[in-house]
Image (tube, rainbow, N blue to C red; front, side, top):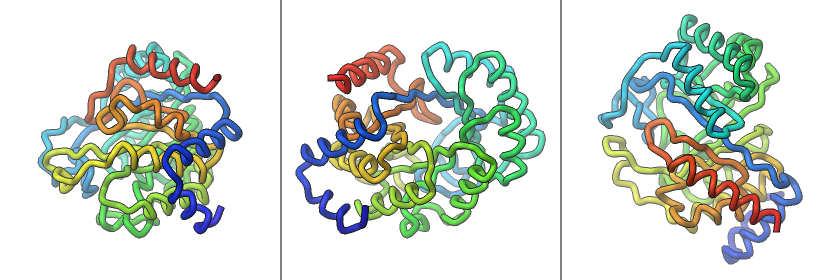
Length: 305
């Protein structure tokens, strides 16, 4: 699909765009709905300056600060993820790198979680290299999460302490070790719809496996605390465009779905989404598990009609 074709899609009425995206989802991705749960295993004092992030050390947000949790805490979080019906469990750490001791502890936890609970393991640990990915894969990791956040052109407006190319290098290193990759970004950070299209095209070129779409929830103390929130219509439109471009990939709605989409979350799944995070986010509380499971069952029923 070229940019001219995509531009013509952007001119469609929302209902027609949603219909086209739902058709692509049915034909290319089927009825599978992927549910994931994440653990904030190391929080705060990050030395990067991502303008959206509550955990950046230079921002005054009141976010929790603690070192890497112990293996037993990771196992307990994985058990809870399994109990609430998550297919995947993701260990997430703040910062752009890990010490050897931290990596060893996480590998040990992944190995034991895989053996005890059988849940598929993911991790989001910053900018790692091939040797580190090799250790993680040997421990049982199957998918690595590393967002590109936005378009290449807009990236310097969001982060200045590392480059977009560094993000790409990490994704390619993970893929080189045979890991699946989960990579998406955040919409509603002042970018244009063309920036979102460029982000989707970049993810398509990288051939990532799963694409989380977060909708910015402005956090007090960050540079984006006063930014105008994205409309529900724009969020749904973006999800539809991502589905049409990315075809068979998992498109997962994450942070912001409750506060921005509110009672219209079902529209996101009619527009092409086929995954979601359950059990809360890194620094934002999510909905109850019962509410999310009710939504998941309604989505599957709707898809089967």
